[in-house]
Image (cartoon, rainbow, N blue to C red; front, side, top):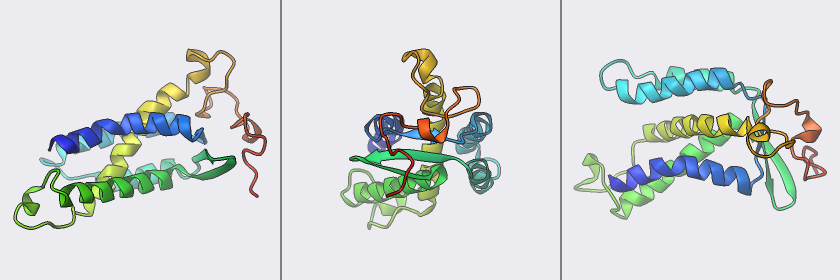
Length: 182
């Protein structure tokens, strides 16, 4: 179980590193609603053993809140974008795949894997996606204040109404064609 805890602790570090390495910029982010949902996600991870598991309604709420939120990123010299909710799903999926590799290689086992290896339950994929979204909210809170916290005059990487006025052309000022498709 120690390896599972290490994977969970690494989420925030992963998001911070990805933000820097891929030059992430986020537009259309709704911080108050996503923070409320992140708190519900956190509470549900503790309470779902005693009351109704609300992962699916919370996930649907997250999809609704993030429907107009885009993440812009760079790979090499090219600039891309994708819906933020899709990125949470992809990250959750690949964490689930990594968890399956870890259990297959006996780094740890769940109770149903002691005698024979089985795939980690697919519900873990959704749980990972929700955990990543919760970690993202924490990192985005700092990033939305970026220009005011430590890079004076630098636009925040999370475009919120209170952060800075960031239009599409300013989302990534170091890339001339940040939002153009080739």
